[in-house]
Image 1 (cartoon, rainbow, N blue to C red):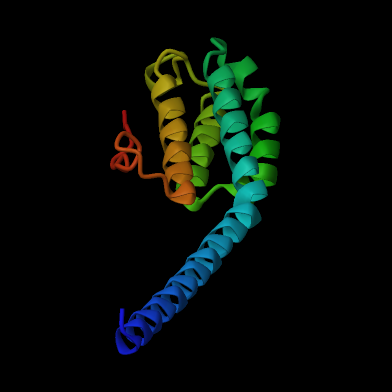
Image 2 (image 1 turned 135 degrees about the horizontal axis):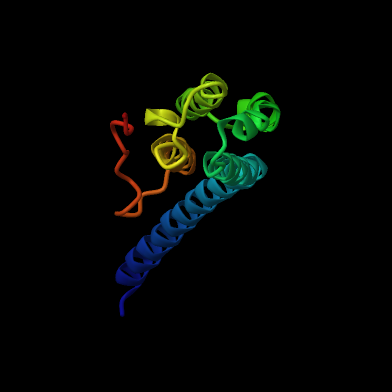
Length: 158
């Protein structure tokens, strides 16, 4: 190999190494930034999923109470959760559905077990709260799994 050819290949190799190093550095910085953002959001996202679990569990328990008066006794528990953790970690859509359920429980206290006040029909309202929480989690986590990325549009109505 002659000297000119050697110098040319050496020059090309050094530039390739330089470009590779710069690309690796940029990729590392990008990954560091993404990981830092993920770790920063992690406590909030964990609390958000725990709040959704607590909200949907409490709503399901209250919805299954057959007696309207006994169900209305749970309004304090529902309101405490609504004004504390739910207000901190859920968006307006989930809070609106949760508030609608609380208002239903309050309005059904002195009504007969008919229509939406019947405990078997309250499942639709419970389902709306769960759907709204699910949509909140999907949007917050930016999850792109095929089954979860589609938003649920219209909530159920009776």
